[in-house]
Amino acid sequence: MKNVKLFVLMFSLIIISSSISVTAIPTKRIEDKIIPDITNYTSTWIDYNPETKENNDITNLYYNNPSQVTTQVFESVDLTSLIIQITESTVTSYISTLVGFGPRRTGTSACDDAGDWIAGVFDGMGLDVRIQEWSSGGYSGNNIEATLPGIDTSSDEVYLIVAHYDTVSSSPGADDNAAGTAAVLASAEVMSQYTFSHTVKFLAVSGEEQGLYGSTIYADEAASLGINIKEVLDGDMIGYAETWDDQHTVGIYGSGTLASTSQQITDTYPGLIDITVIQYGASGNSDHWPFIQNGYDAAMYSEYHFNPYYHSSQDTIDKMDLDYDMRVTRMMTATLAEFSNLIISDNGGGEVHLLRPRVSIEDPSNGEYIRGTIDIKGKASSISGSVKYVLVKIDDNDWEYAETEETPGNYINWTYSWDTTKVDDGSHLISAVSLNNHYLDSPTDYSRVNVVNKILSTNIIMINQADINEKISIQSFTTGGLPPYSYIWDLGDGTKKYEQNITYTYKYPGEYKVELTVKDSMNNTTYASKTIPIIDDIPPTISIINPENAFYLNNNEVFTLKNPVIIGDIDIIIDVTDNSIIDYVVLYINNQEKFKFTDTPYIWTWDENMFGQATINVVAFDKSGNKANDTINVWKFF
Image 1 (cartoon, helix red, strand yellow):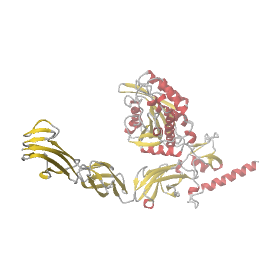
Image 2: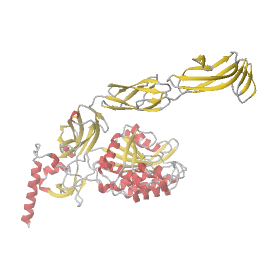
Image 3: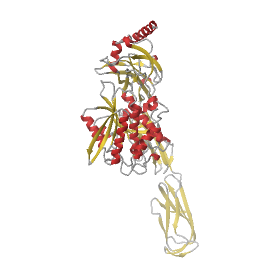
Image 4: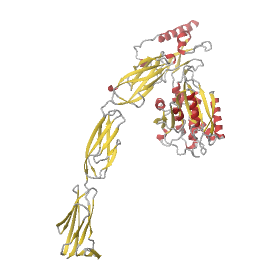
């Protein structure tokens, strides 16, 4: 039996030695060696006694102690098991307890009691707890900090999740902000069970409602001490959702790095988070802001639509969507775990940890517009600089090698040249992965970019003709160039507009030349025009308003009759309206033209002598050739 064990050990060492000796690019495609995140596979583990080894650097130990190497089966890093431990009951329990303290205005006993309880929860998780007492703006309070140290002694990176636990005096603060504090506590509860390369800090602050006092003092202190906080995730009001869109959207205010990584996390674990990220500019109304002011990368995670019960006695747990709260908490926790580098650990009780490599795409950034041949650039890191390859692929094409450059630090720079003219214009996904000496793969990093190689061009989309006073939709269709675009519309009647799509109403008939000038972000210019006839097919309205059915004596109305009866002179008064422009009006008496009006007022004095019945007829013509008439019969004497 002893000989059998020796044979197995020797066989294992032969396999491992062969993997160690790989120094040149293998003929087999690297993508065939990349191990999916959810697949069990065989890889190298190290068994050693930490008490007898001064150097616990894993790579050096591997090379220097080959006799202690064994081969075991383990699972690649996958955040699923971490994510699913955050449940609705977990966040509900924390929120309920915090709400139970009542309104937690900074400086009150309720706020102090809540802080003490938070510190006790952190302590029960085995974390290093620090109470930071602060005074500012006439207020005093406590920040509660819990630390999970990273095991990579060469790293000074810190990743932090923060929320405020205080409230306004009138509110129990379920959503604002027991929800965010519960996310901090739930993250600590789960992550404290794992090992990470970098240090993670869980922070609950007070004084937010009075002016971000607690977080300002904490961030100022961290900056003055030179603490290398890489990312700050602030949870503030993450539990209110009414519609389906609300339940599947989160706003991230600030860091584009956090926004893109959080979106990648939710895309990687479908069914566990199911939230779309919408990134907004950093706002100054929550605890991420003091960190940004101190030069740290930070963002606030907040619900998609604002809670109408905010800062009121109605901000209670029954108004919240606790499933949504749980999924936002999962997103924040998984993002925090991704950045702080979850480590594959020996679940059998051994002391050895194998660090997974990391890769990042630094340029182009997510959402960027690109053209021509560009260099995709990034960094890759692993303990002791054991990154062997970096591979890049575009969309679903094959993985290809990137050029790498060693640096003095524990990372390398890599570059991949991409000729974007060989792909169609539109959205494309860049993926990057790194492999260490043992072909252990990093989590894949992604950057979705927009390729725009087509020449800038634009078209005008509108109806072929329209009536006067008709609301017209005028749209532009622009392609190519490098967005964003700027628009200048000249509508042919002296009107200019500057939106992409417009509506307009022409008041007068005629042919109008609609012209559009578009510029892209590189100041390229394109032009389009279209002529639109504006027609008027509605006739004017015309009526003879004097004389009326009455007896007139020398232009004065004496009394009412069934028909107009006139003795002496009379003013014939005509009323004309049109939806565009009247061209002229003609007055006829007994079919003889008496006067042609080319302007207002339409008044003509009839001073002809006659005896008997007469017919007065008037005809109006507008500029479009439409006409209308009115006729009356009168009796006239002298």
